Image (cartoon, rainbow, N blue to C red; front, side, top):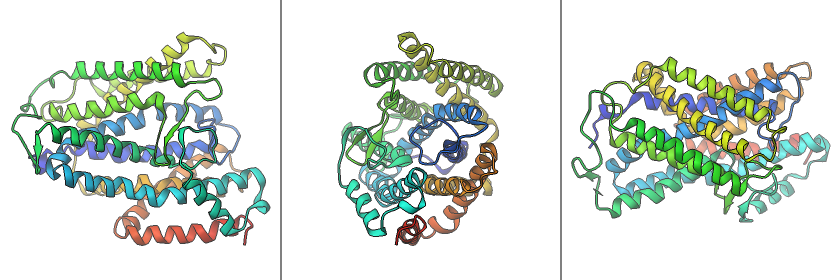
Length: 419
């Protein structure tokens, strides 16, 4: 069974950095063209820069988070056993979605309606929440056709990851390799190595190919000019973009293989961080060029093939950079990193409504430019979410959730002009 030092600290530290970048990505959404359905819209100078930043961040953040989750999947399953593991993941990933999703829909739709119809045209409080809860129990199976459909928003990552856990943990259990928290020696972990981790290149190439091929197939089947990257819902809980599903599975699987082959117990991964960074910059420039000129190349299959291939290569290149740089510079278990890593779970869960509310409040500052507002929202959301994670949600999650519900239930319709 893995010892405490077998914990790869730099992956914990990378995870909280990735979560903070997710906060930054959502902070930029109000000042960017991506995603087009965002509830706060502030056109102005700097939109092109925001578009490019969100495009790049959106390419690698979630695949990298799935890789980290995949790496910690087996040791957690080994440590807990399949039954305890499943119960823990249902509580950790499933329960917060059930609690937070209705609240998120209320905030999102309230702000969206204010932006569209003004402060004086909001419904009475109980009518507003009756409408929102009615959508919650209208189970949709298929593609999203309206931004008013019930959504789990950023919590889609947690529901899809929970699905991966529920699918793969019984597979290992049924194979007879993991029982009651024990693992057969050598069955799932290669011996420690002190050199080039075995088959690293093959796994990276396979990950890129799977991501690219599944994206291409998904693009051909599902992409449309009016909705190039649609969302699909299975009920009101599991929601994802089918074009990217294969990418997430591939990166999650590569994380599982990285643990099994103990990539991080020997020397550093191949490639210096600067080399990986150069690849990231070149591929980012290529993707930006393709996306900014796709209008003049609409309808060409070659454009779809190029975008999908560059997307897969970018996700892998950024992962290579993060792993290479993280292993060299972030493999520390000091107090700051330990606290930030511990806060990352609640930071991810609670940041979304805070970002939206900060963006909304700044719409009343008409002299502010989009870049300045973006910086303020990013900094404010990071500080608030980390503070709330550490001093409220972490130590008292039930009380924090209850307080959030009470505040949103009474505050939003009142501010919107309702009674």
